[in-house]
Length: 195
Length: 195
Image (cartoon, rainbow over all chains, first blue to last red; front, side, top):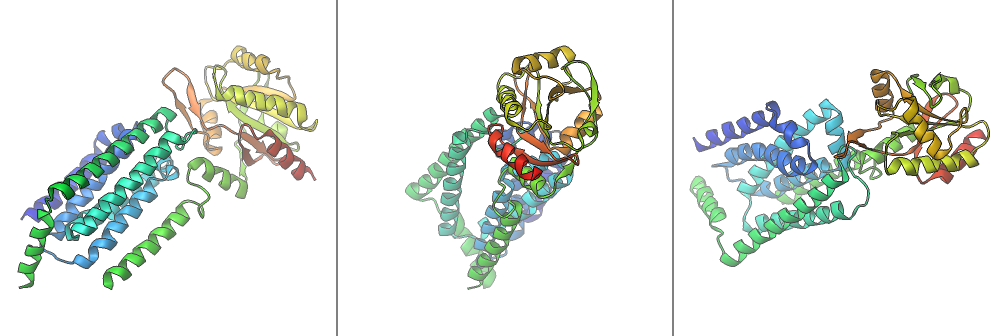
């Protein structure tokens, strides 16, 4: 039942983003495009992925699923494809589908299947990549996207650094306070299924 | 084992997608992509009609048979267009006699008088160097689209645009784009073409 609700909720979020003025509004600035539109699009797919993963314990799929999400995001974070998605409707549609199905869905699925070590590795890796991209956005003297101003690029750079810092803080919090209950409860769940 | 194999497979597919999506690692930005693309496959530009700083009308096709260099500017541009104008001053002084220069304004507000401001500032003299506006909105949009020139408004009533020096071959095809500072590269390429 909860899985059904997750799938419906995720699909509703994706529809809202695709059909309402929210999408174009977020895309009008680079920072809200990458730190608003992308995460919402991915979240729609992730909620569905997590819903599908409920009650299905397939731990070996966790690493490839999380890697698939990472590589999909890396592709669509290329300035070339950010520009192309704004200039070409078919690229935009392909990206929307990619972010939901090849980034969000495997992220939600993989995260649910992953144990604490893989989760920690994933977050640490994401934080490192975001920090490098943030530094790049602040250091590069020219515009990387033809569709956005240099000031937008700087704003995104700062945004990346803030998100990276947030992820590191969350990871530290988990490590120091030690709340790793969620993966444990999933294990138990999987064991019940196996019985 | 399954996890490792699946992860390697995902990594391989992702790497292939990134390789393809960056033109074999040569284009992270749309600016680099368009330069690669144009160098590999020169593009015939639409034959639009211009008016120059003296009020005279002319067409791109008038230039067939001789090398032509274009740049895209606007008359009240405070920064990059000054660099572009200075680059054209250098080209004016160094290119062979039959070569022609056209600074094309993409600002619809640039009438003959305003085109004259730009011409006077850089010493542009017809027929060697025309500063030109495009009357027809659709023509202007078509030319910009064909050359992949992206113009976005800045926050101060001006524009931001991807800048370059555009080499048009004697057949009227856009065949190469150079950095605004790279007048020497353009001169050498033009000498190579003529040989």
